[in-house]
Length: 99
Image (cartoon, rainbow, N blue to C red):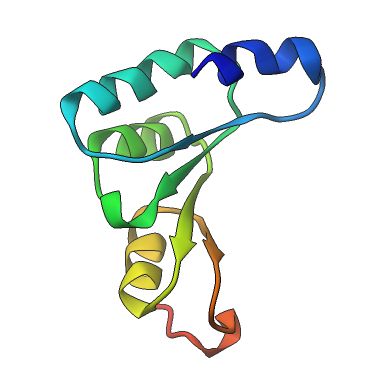
C-alpha cells in the first residue's frame, strides 16, 4: 500500500487507484485504511466479490470499481452485479451476456 501513499507525489494530477483482492478481515481493513489517501477508483479481484469494502466504496463513496481479471461468464456476472467495469482476457466482451 506504500504505492498509494506515494503516488500523488510522483504523479500529481493523474488519478490513482487501489488494486486489491481478498475477503479476509485483515485484508479488508488494510483496504479501508487506503481510503485516507486520494484514490479515484478500486480495481478488485472478481472472484472476491461481493465484500463489504467494495460495497462501501461503490455505494457510499460513489467510487468506480473495476474487476480483474475476468476470464469467464461467472466473473462477468459478478462484475456487473457488484462493480462497474472489468479487465478481461480470453474472450470478446461483445459476445458475453450482461444481465
